[in-house]
Length: 132
Image 1 (cartoon, rainbow, N blue to C red):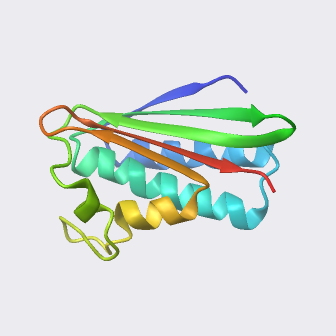
Image 2 (cartoon, rainbow, N blue to C red):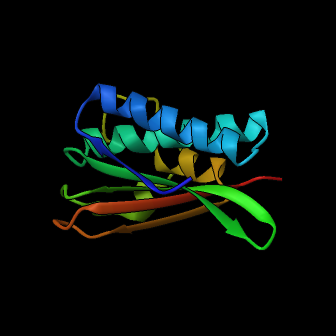
Image 3 (cartoon, one colour):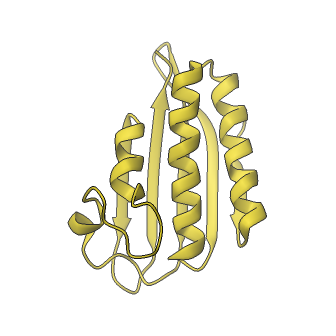
């Protein structure tokens, strides 16, 4: 599977990102539980890209490390950035009216989680889930 770049500018795009992540997870032979975890994290991150970042995009691709296969998803926007990353990663924190699964919940659902952000400079979140 080659990297798939998907725009995120509306609700239908969030659904498309989830579908692409699920397809990549199936192809990488992630267990059903790990597929669900990755799709849940991707859904949250795509929604954040749209809601807080004003839209952006996602890149979904299969990755390998030695004999291991996995899926990497990178979410990026040019929004206002996150002023306090530590607070944003706190359980239950929400800057909107959502459930507060947020970044902290997404981080717990994946094996690798990297966030790059600066106020006024947008946000990029990279997640990886490895097949067991």
